[in-house]
Image (cartoon, rainbow, N blue to C red; front, side, top):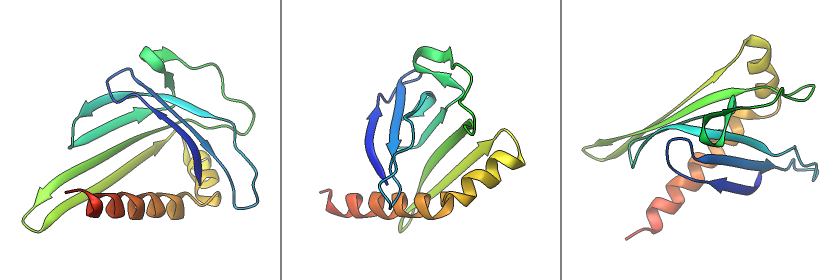
Length: 120
């Protein structure tokens, strides 16, 4: 679960989250920056770079970088949502999958859908 989020939605803007496991264990803050922002259509960010495109220091042992893109495409009946995540290698991908990556992104999508349904 995300217990803290900081989002500055602009190219070079900050993206920071703190995650907490069901047992209450908090992961170190994950920081990155937005690479591309097309309001309402596409957002791309990476943990390889920090705010204002500054290179990140080496990740702590067990850490891993990633880049992600969220795309929203209007359809006749609503919206098509696509999430694409890229990892440095298969080991980093497997590590993230073992941490509940797919379930977490599914919950995030459920929250986004619930939010959209409440909007006028």
